[in-house]
Length: 156
Image 1 (cartoon, one colour):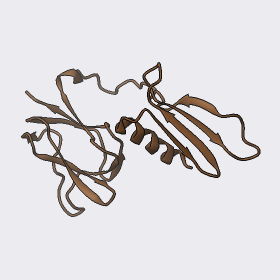
Image 2 (cartoon, helix red, strand yellow; image 1 turned 90 degrees about the vertical axis):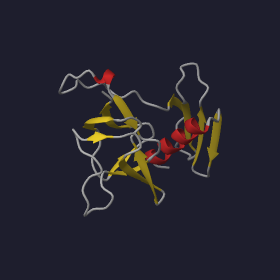
Image 3 (cartoon, one colour; image 1 turned 120 degrees about the horizontal axis):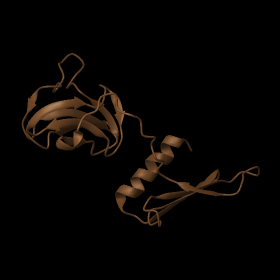
């Protein structure tokens, strides 16, 4: 099982609200639990081969290192539009069209900001507020994760 598959399994378990999921194949055994003391989901992975080490319990969600921002901004006054799903985000309706929005453009609540393709379905991501696009936090045709920030909107 690849790391990407394991990460998707963990995200699915967390999103579904299940407290524990176990998956066993002839090659490995995985257990994901969401009710840990730390508040973070934990995962236990054990390869079932003769040379495998003992099962290990590790945090399922790794802390991302904080990197200093290139430009100091007070983003607390901005509304962050986040991805509601895992998929591939597109800033254009098609390759030969212009972007749905750009930095500095005024948007109204409900305006389409981008589309996310998930399992061959294209989902329009709409602005949650009226305001001005301050920053686009993704590239066209880039993979996005659940709850990943996509846009910063200044509602003033």
